[in-house]
Length: 421
Image 1 (cartoon, rainbow, N blue to C red):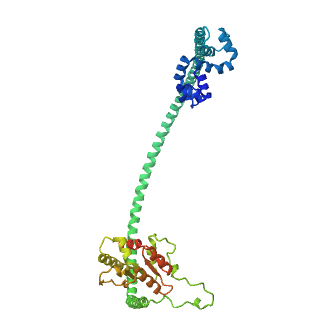
Image 2: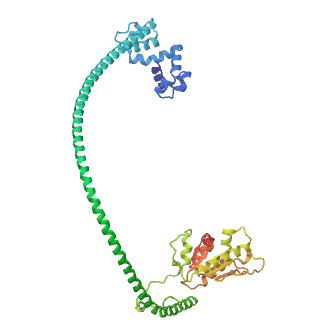
Image 3: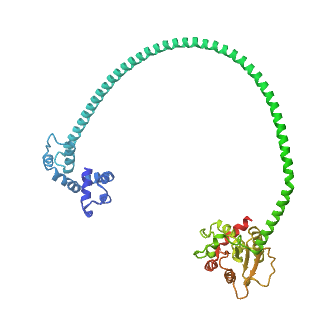
């Protein structure tokens, strides 16, 4: 009945659905039957009109059975559940007897089904018992056969053990005989080894004496040449050091020319210092500044206040300048690069005196001139082809330096390099 009513609720318009069941009308049919079962049953009990509306689809689909139920005599072969449902919904005269008869029929059917299931279970248990007995008999027979085989194997093993013990005693006797002979041979070998060791020590002593004599002869030969070699080497080192000092002082190239330079041919365009090594490295790569400082005759131009305010802007300006210039002095001594540090003259309240370390040039911009413009003048003053590196995190300064042919580098790389120093 609940399933039939749940089916009907889903087909009725919303305004025709009874008020208690409207919240469940949108549910799926099985969900309506499950969740709204109690409400449907209560409404079927007290609302005759709703009962008749639920019975209408059954009247159309089971016309013969409906007619028989209303006549009070359903066929004996009819499903007792369907008879009870139709009797409850249509409620003809004596409908309670029909429901009671259906209940009794269902109980008889359930009892008969339980008895049949019990008989089938008993039959299955008997078959299992017979099979278990047969398996048990087969297992016992197998165990007896295994026992007979084990006994025969034990007897054979005892016979083999006796033979093995006999052979072991014979082998032990032979081993004792061999051990006695080996001991005699070992004693003789020890005596021979002792004699050989004594002879070997004599030979080693003679070889040591011969090596000492040979070494003394070699030392005497070397000592004769050492004085002249030392004098010549000292003269050669002096000449080389002097030549290198002159080359560094005059910034001379490593060679004047090569034979291949005299051969006529077309040469590619000469690369300006825009193609500096390290061009492929990104501005944030820690190796960028290291690579650039290894270039010969490199000129490092530093945007002073941009570096100091990036690294230690909390200090007074005078302390910022002193700290940066001191660090650049150590960098110039390590790399032998030309270093120029530029500060903005507008930041000064009065002229200042700075003791610049050796190898570091400190410049301030003139009145009406910014430090950025002074850096641009320095880059443009360099000859084409010289490696120039501008250290600044100011985007405009970096772009201007790149357009002028210099290689820009961020201030953080210089601060990291000075921190390591």
